[in-house]
Length: 271
Image (cartoon, rainbow, N blue to C red; front, side, top):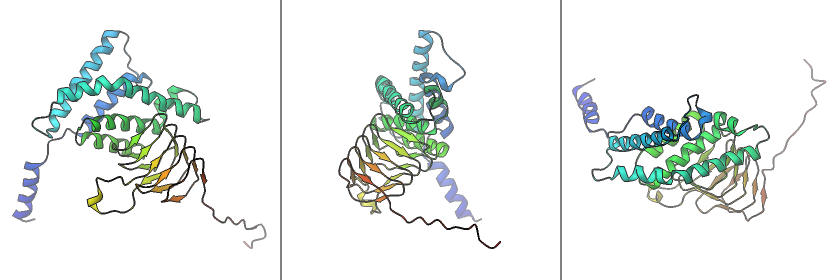
């Protein structure tokens, strides 16, 4: 290695943007989720003052995270943190609708405790909802870090910019991709391997709607791929497994992929 390479690395080290470690950011979210969903934790609190103090500490920790990110010199990080926690009860209510959707929709789900403690879909949704709330408050970087942490842990990739209604039910979840400008209505059920993505576009279209809209009461079965910002799946539709969709579908439609399945009798096959 030559001196120019060393200087290049030094320049990157000196000028890198200051951002807290992913682990510190993750710890803050896990502590918040453990507080509001004690099913996740083995350490519980038994007084109102302790609960209030825990929320106060989490708000202070969020301010510290925002200050450490140093995205701008004139950001009012105290106001951002205060606003986030002021709006958090409504966010918590949304998370509980997701639990309800899973409990009512999954025959294998035995209890809310099981969903909160074990379901990767609920974990990914919870991280997304927190990240989306922070993104709406113009918090940089941290929202994307949060959803990518959930992605790495669950295999479910939800961009924090997506807009998702109440009662989202993700079943199994592995391989789901939900793009930045996706809009999802209420009471939507999404199975593993579903992609809500964009068609290949140039970078100059980055600020346009590139991902589909999914209206209320839609079911998206495993492996379905729905692409494009102009693509709308109308309410109460069923999109079958492995469907490739780039055009809108009217409400109350069923779309399925037709393939040929052959059964060959091999009992007389020569060994």
